[in-house]
Amino acid sequence: MTQHYVRSATGVLKQVLLCPPTHLDLNPINKIAEDWLDQGQAIDLEKCAAEHQQLISIYESNGVKVELLEATKALDSQVFARDFGFNLKEGYVLGRFKEKVRQEESQKYAAKMRELGVPVIATCEEGVVEGGDFWQLDDKTLAIGVLQRSDEVGIENIRAQLAPLGYRVLSVESKPEYLHLDMIFNIIGEKTAVTYYEGLPTAFQEYLDNAGYDLIKIEEAGVFKHFCNLQALGNKKVISLATNIKVNQALRDRGFTVFELNSTEILKTGGGPHCMTFPVKRT
Ligand SMILES: NC(=[NH2+])NCCC[C@H](N)C(=O)O
Image (tube, rainbow, N blue to C red):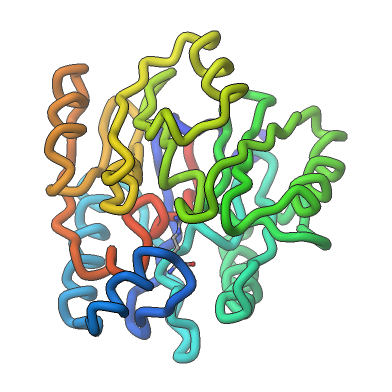
């Protein structure tokens, strides 16, 4: 039987790769972290560790196997496991980080993926592509955001490598200050997404409307509070921030079970639960 890794954005999540926030630090490489640094903030690593532990507990209590990458000292954004690439049913795509401070993460995560036995099916060799920009829209349609971290050269490079497998890759352009596509758009269930709709380009808005998506819309200020940065567990279960009150209610109204993560400290560095999670297996 052929082994399948991640078949869709919304199937049942079975296994994830995370990295503890042991060496997390504020680094002015995104707007959120810059704003906190401007206010003279520092990071409380004990709080970060507790928040990450809660994330692990939510996964484990939902039957999701958690794999941990050991944190490397010089890598202050490594907790955001999402960003080194993305996983498909055939294996994973190794992206290419834009920021120099994150580039060494690639080899650490690639080594862990080898250990987990997940094959690499494409590697970004020119331009840049980060996993936070990636979404699988359907069996053969993928989207990659062009905001601050991925560019058209990188997307074209990946597009050419995935075409033989039958995938088409859409580019979704938005403002660099939103950082990654997963900060303004997040698929949380079958044809259901949370989004800052006005931040999406018209062509992608039309794509979602024509495909019949039920969209839970947030305001622009919510982007920087990680209100779009949820993590779907499958079966109408989702991890969201405890502070994401309106979205959580909208989800419950639609029959979703919401697991609330009490995170505020890790968020200061610019990422939420979706950014912290690399799906290894999803049915
Ligand atoms: N998928 C995401 N949105 N990741 C957020 C990454 C945040 C990280 N500090 C960076 O700027 O690179």
